[in-house]
Amino acid sequence: MKTAPILRWNPLREMEEMENRMATLFGSSPLRITSQDREENLVTTDWVPSVDITEDEKEYLIKADLPEMKKEDVHVTFEDGVLTITGERKVEKEEKNRKYHRIEREHGRFVRSFSLPENADATKIAAEFKEGVLVLRLPKNEKAHPRVLEVKIT
Image (cartoon, rainbow, N blue to C red; front, side, top):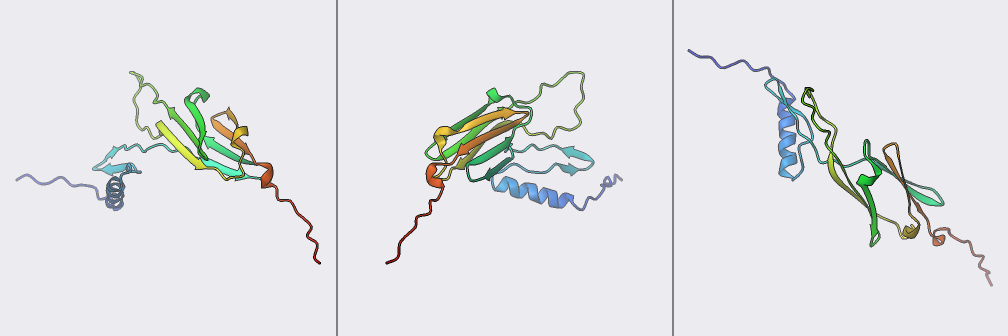
């Protein structure tokens, strides 16, 4: 009589599987690495680079993390009030004598779009790419600086 193999129970596995099914149902890629019967199935995600957006009295500042990318692989456009950053991070070539245990860093094409406030002067956007960080500076229009007018009361 043949017996069924004993499986190690992982209480979080059911939660991970449910989360992955929900992500697939709503049209996105599963976000976690799932483990089943001692094996790990690696699932990659769509890559969306992290971005910080700040402002001061003079300008808006956008910083996008694009590690291990070249500035030639990044494009910035502005159209109809929308600033768009696109690019592609290439997959590293596999080496024949190297055994890969885990590949978790995202790669592939990405698109990030941002609606600019009316007071941003898109004609004067400055871009700098240094050490894997894209820095965009968007000066504010003169209209952005409020003027105080004295109103005489009669």
